[in-house]
Length: 131
Image (cartoon, rainbow, N blue to C red; front, side):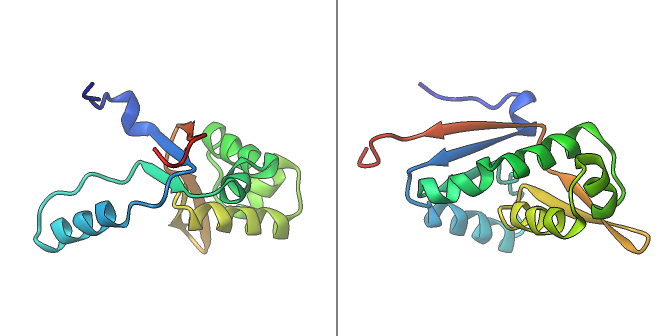
């Protein structure tokens, strides 16, 4: 069955757990960009192991993502106030999420404004990774 993308899908990150990372797909997107062709934004995150998924699924990280979706914070400091946690801890968690390309930073005066790139996260866990 052919899957088609809806407008709703454009705000959804699909996380696939238990599948080897698809380097060839990423390289093809890079080649297209280098040729000046339009490239669709990546809305798929492949996490080969449950350990990597555990970082994303940590309660502290999910609370940060939810707070970013619900509040228009102007800085990591303001985000720390919203989630009622220590600035250093929130900064570390936001950096983890940025490394996964789920959160990005926009310059806002002298502060880095954290922004979630997606409104929803859909998770697919492959129980048989040999398929």
